[in-house]
Image 1 (cartoon, rainbow, N blue to C red):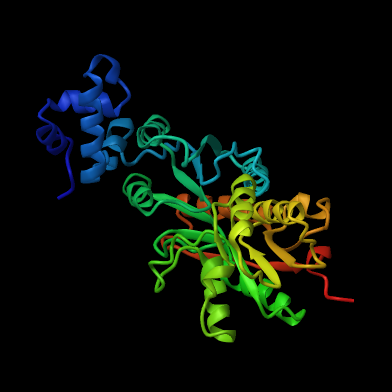
Image 2: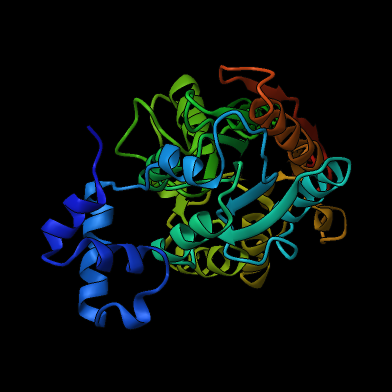
Length: 349
């Protein structure tokens, strides 16, 4: 038996109606701030979600073919979906495909800067038919969404859950192609700049770009050289600051850096340049994503190209196919990547 609203109310020591008003966004006159926080903490801890079948029975009888045709989107970028160089292109693909259907994108939210309550409120308000997840997502939040939303599709470079639909461009294999490119160019000492936060789960790492780097090092060198690894979030500003700090204490530098995305690579190359370390003459750099700026940055950045617009288009198609009952099982669609060689990784002449 699932968790009921009554269970939450008993745990919080309040009435069921109070819990209902808080969850439905009517907390202003329902309870004080401390009680509201207590209720939400218990909701999160117990994993409570409304009874979807009951909600559907209230809206319409089971033999009615009523369809809201609403889709929501949650993404891991800290920017607006239209202003992130990676996700904006995926978003464009989604919108172009949605424009040919009767479905509407009723909300898109960055999960890094909104509260659990806001996500919950939007799911409740719009009663979406399905959700698109873009990029890295917290496992606890994914568990919640699976309880509340029947149809979910994930689009990105790292597989997250085989029980939901996924449209992926293999981050592991794409990273290996970048690393092989550097090694084939005579670079046997290769560093990594990106997130290494999943290091504790080596058996099932979420961050496939770092997992690929680890696998590559084990294959050719026996172990990762920690002096050549810079842990940073996937943002240009933070990568720049982390690289500046790294260069102040680094005893030896690798011959090349593989960066987990292009945004990181831009920050890395600026920090190197400010320390009179030239790319590619002194050190080579390869990025990942192939955003538009790679061609205009100096030097032009070698990068693993991800079909971002196609990721968005395919994600919507897969989700609608599932919503409309054309398939009752999850699938994974794999799209190809392409290594695009530019100035930042040129061989010695």
